[in-house]
Image 1 (tube, rainbow, N blue to C red):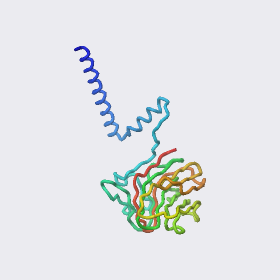
Image 2: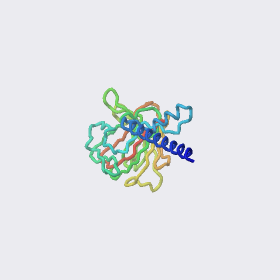
Image 3: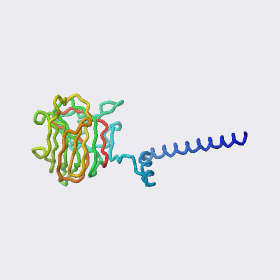
Length: 237
């Protein structure tokens, strides 16, 4: 009986030792800025198994101010983090701006963010966007736009800093749709030359264009838009 007890005790000690080493490794990886989930994904892929991990290009829950973003027109004061316990990014100033997500550029991806507009004529989500050699914006925006044509979802193309008119895709919302003071999940699926927008999981608009094959993601506001955003993500396809 003593021999079995000693063996059992040894297994328990080995288990505690392995746990301590694993926790230490996790702590070191975290300090180095390495996501443990990414390491697990690489291991799974390395042994030939199909990865169930999402290829997340960019994510921000706005708990670390705006270090992952750049104000295109240098209007940083117009953007604020409004709540320490449940931080959200809010546009609170006058005028318009583009807020570009750093290191979010790719070709095909899916953008998602939670959004709520309380005042103004709308906001936009940028995709496949970049700054050209003239320092001007080029790319696309999906716009949640209560100010356009009595309220529509639209997609615009930007060329050398100018939005082309008319939008290359537009659709009206379902009857009874409420634009303001509503928490919405906004998603844009970017695949080849086809772009599909969803609001709260429902498809609302499809547009097609082949001018830009890659670029980053971001947010757009205009006029006196008062809107807040949370959990902005870009996931490659």
